[in-house]
Length: 174
Image 1 (spheres, rainbow, N blue to C red):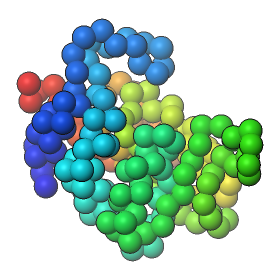
Image 2 (image 1 turned 90 degrees about the vertical axis):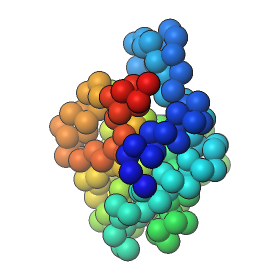
Image 3 (image 1 turned 120 degrees about the vertical axis):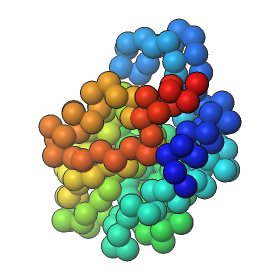
Image 4 (image 1 turned 45 degrees about the vertical axis):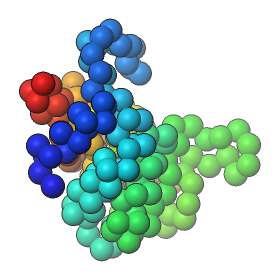
């Protein structure tokens, strides 16, 4: 599947919306990439999982960033037959109180899976949690790079971002 094919799938799923939107980092935008539209659409989820799986090695382990990265990591893990863990923004205050859910060995290499990057801070938070738990993290797979500094912030933390599509791709398809 090409980048253009994925852009069309995202557009068909009505994942790009126009208007006035507040973003998680506090800024505003005249467009919004609705991750729940593409993460709950079987065709989109299947295509994303296949595209991510093509970028993995057989010994990779995934880490889905809660909440949006979890269905992507799960679908990709099944497609690529690799394990995954879940990286939370903060430890839960009940149960195991873990930030990382699932087995993770010290020194294990992990690829972060995330939906959309604007500033990249959510992915960086996950990288830091994974590293604190002993993982080695130097790659992040994303569906959409909004091209607003996420790639650069991840690079500052020693992580290469691989995005399937960019905001320019999505908006140019209009």
